[in-house]
Length: 61
Image (tube, rainbow, N blue to C red; front, side, top):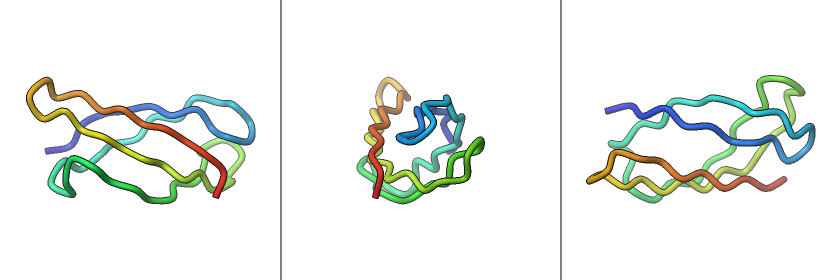
């Protein structure tokens, strides 16, 4: 199942919307380019399957 989440770019501070695939596990980590400035952001994602919520933390790689 895909869940919608947002993160704030570590460089330009713009809000980005992403779709997170819950079949990847409840704890995920990967790099996603900002949709505005195209710079890479290291995302750490935690999924609460019971509540179907996603927590995303961001930092520059």
